[in-house]
Length: 264
Length: 264
Image 1 (cartoon, rainbow over the protein chains, first blue to last red):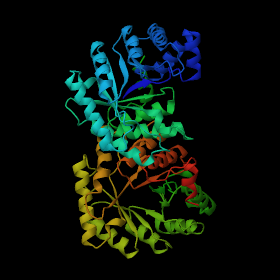
Image 2 (image 1 turned 180 degrees about the horizontal axis):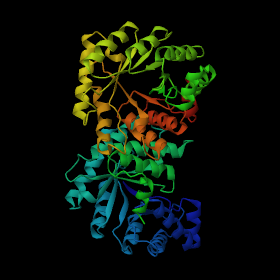
Image 3 (image 1 turned 30 degrees about the vertical axis):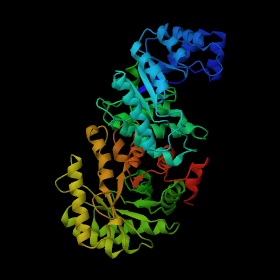
């Protein structure tokens, strides 16, 4: 599984403060913690409170690139903020994210092509969040079709089924898991699948338990990537063990250590 | 999920000693611990060291029945030991287990019918442990066919795919998970599926982690029952959460407590 660390986000108070005070040490420490814990890439989001998101995202990207080469995932709803991050990126980036709306796709797919970036496509549109598997797959197919028309390589597309909180949409969760599996048959080559994991446990009392149980099941359904907190050791241990059971990593007695060593 | 507690087994030294010394308090305490932790039934096995398995199994059944009415799962490879347990059983029992060998089925299926017991059928034969899904399903179909011919109700049959240790048969584990799902389509009504969970982690260093990750995935594939250690809190929490994600239990904030309360 491709792990994108979610912790560099201005909505977290420590990161929000570090962005405001331009405290580079806090950002770099958070980046290294996530990489050491097993992150393959880092999400970078200046948060809803940022007044200068363009300069803030550039400051964040520069701060992180000083100490690591892992890919960065530029997370913003504003295309101009995303592009300002892409402009100074040393390595292949990930754009987080486009919706299935044509006006979004017409801006973000060309941006992804221009910067040779991977792209996360959310199966959501201006009409709202889909209510079942068919609606999710319909939006996924629209994103894939648009990317194909624009000549964007589908293997660089990550589709996100939009995970709903368990306490809000319990009856839909199995459908969401099955959607992950069905993304693979939309086109050949297949798009990849991704989830923003922490949504599943939003507002519940046992967040880590629900996160790791859902992630284990999603891996079972062929999940390729997740945006998550890699410093949640129980979560990472569950994910690594799930991949071992699915024969995607080779068993050895010290497999947990062996997996994490691959990163650093 | 139907949980069968595995701890009353003479192979564990405390239980082996209690059987030898006829220490009823130890057996009853172990029974109550498992029930309070969430067990729906209790496996009863006098262990390989028992010299009088017939009188030992009867002593165990009597000791447990003094304090609880939960179904007991009589666990022995010897049909006469199983029958001696069934003879004194107050409630509907479970027979653990038959293989797919005709000579076993011809003895154990009539026994299950006579005592109105449920029956666990292992997809294994005198030829050995199956090496792939097709071989497992072939043996499963043979068990189902034999049960049908003898007029045993298939909804009372639990099929066990034979879980192999992850460190021995890593490449087979996904196949075993898929077998669980395919048991359902062998006949209508469907047989149920069951696993002896702890086999998966035999000889590994992270037994609880591997057990709960495998169980979560097996539930995803439609597993109906498992023989396991219900006092492993992390394991039960994972199983309950998996059922919640699959919409088999109703979400409430205190769902872990609510599930366990159903038992007692």
